Image 1 (cartoon, rainbow, N blue to C red):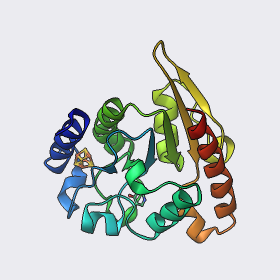
Image 2 (image 1 turned 135 degrees about the vertical axis):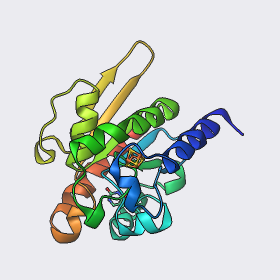
Image 3 (image 1 turned 60 degrees about the vertical axis):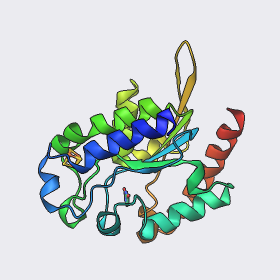
Length: 195
Ligand code: URA
Ligand code: SF4
């Protein structure tokens, strides 16, 4: 098996056996994330919901259907990208993840980012956005302020672009946000083309 795929599988195994925070107690399945190990672009959500917990697959419910549509509008398929969450087990009743849960779980996301080494990270919603912006040394601001902006992290070897947008689930109860998501995905497509 290819090196990146093997490493991602090892991380997924650790997640499936993880008991580092209380969320393991209620999970049906942990949801490590999935997609192309060589993806240039990663999408990061908040935490699994009910469907994701049942099937162990990220974004496989209603929010996932919105995400699939947005991807296809810019010519991308799930197989082209890597999709995961900040927190890998479902918070009961879909409550927000706590700071302790995020602190316990985020090292897995850090490892996944390191292995995949994407050119673009798209953060979906406030939790992923504040985690990723802070991790890379930016000020974490509300999603409504930073959506569609491109944050560049330049190292000696490469440039990583962070692009925050709304969580696809928010467009289910606030339909006008769907237009903003579409706009932001056009920016994502443009930036991907440039890399
Ligand atoms: N919402 C998320 O943040 N992640 C999922 O995987 C599904 C819904
Ligand atoms: Fe482990 Fe993360 Fe699941 Fe908590 S949410 S038990 S830290 S995998």
